[in-house]
Amino acid sequence: MTDRQQIGGLSMRKTALGMAVASMMLLWGCSGNEQRPSSDSGAGKENAKLEPVTLSFYSKLTPDEFDNYIVQHVKKKFPHVTLKQVEQKTAKMQDLITTGNVPDIIWEGSTNLQTLTPLKVMADLRPFAEKHKFDFGKYRDGLVDTVKAYSESGQLHFLPFNVFEFALHYNKDVFNKFGIPFPKDHMTWDDAAALANKMNRVDNGVQYVGMRPPLSTNRTQMQLSLPYVDPKTGKASLQTEGWKRLFETIRSTYPGPSTVRSFFDYRDEFLKQRTVGMLPDILLLQNSVMADYEKEGLDWDVVTYPVFADKPKVGAGLFSDGMVISAGSKHADLAFQIIAFLSTDPEVQLHATRDGRVTGLKDPQLLARAFENNPSAKNKNLKQISTLNFPATYPMNDYDRRGLVVVESKLKSYVAGKGDVNTLLREAEEQLDKDIAAQKLQ
Image (cartoon, rainbow, N blue to C red; front, top):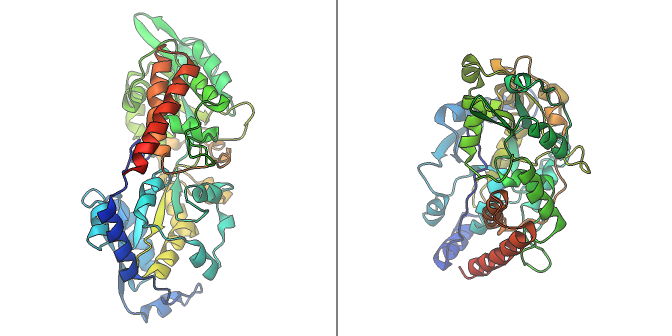
């Protein structure tokens, strides 16, 4: 599994694509006539009488993952349904729209929903939820509000399959080498930076670094609930105390003026070179085979992700894999029943959670069994990892992804000592305003 929140942009198609989308919407329609399966023990018998139906499922999962986490459960609950996987690596959404082959269900990351917004392919799930009396209270507090914040007018386009947990990883050997106490749960960024500074040193010709920064700026940006754009003016809003705080916090994690390197460089420093004391990011159990590194000598553990002193229980934000229904699906009602089942059924979610695809549900019994199938999770300090709250929502829009690129460019200059924070934020704001104007002309 890789970090699914990679930085990137997606431009809106021009007039031809817009016309194609509009035409497809008229042709497809949205059928709400599928029979709802019973929730009692006779559901299998009832479904067996239904006409067979095939739904297409656009997914970045491997075929084995798709069968393991999706198909086998759907076949049991909805025996009349066949899911046909359309792999994202072989088909672009824009091309599927143009040819009229938009899939019924779309698998996507929550932070990538804005890439789908210009394409007008996401159905609002609220009417289906109301019809089927779907209980949103099952999810962790703040999750649904965060998903709604990605929409234009409070629509709900996404149900989570799993969420990504965040943690502050630490290398016990580095701490022991310098006689420094291990980090603790619920530390602030200031606490973590002060602890890191004790390890920033050269020893026998080897440079040790106390802590590498969060490996993407949007972790901290979401934690502080910082908008890129003022929703009232439509202009960039980066010359604020919040953004200044973010820049200064990130720079405090470096031992001095530095060249910002890549995600993989920093992760390798922690996992392979083992010259880094702490690494705050997505819990590595979710995207690295930690058993292999342990065999090579890595002795590690985790505490909760660092927080800001005035937001003591607020984590990095919602990063999630989940499902969207196509607005053009002829089986939208059935598709909703399927994604609602996958998102909330205890058996489905326990299966995934034990493997490390941690549930977005608040059920403590499910959360307690996270990573149960991963031998590297044994005896790790995981009990507190899921206790941090999702941040307060903030105004989001289609220019946020461009804003992230602009901000990170200026942040690199700040970390390298090539400018003061106020000047760099002013330049970032000016650049983002230019980019917004250019994007509006596309």
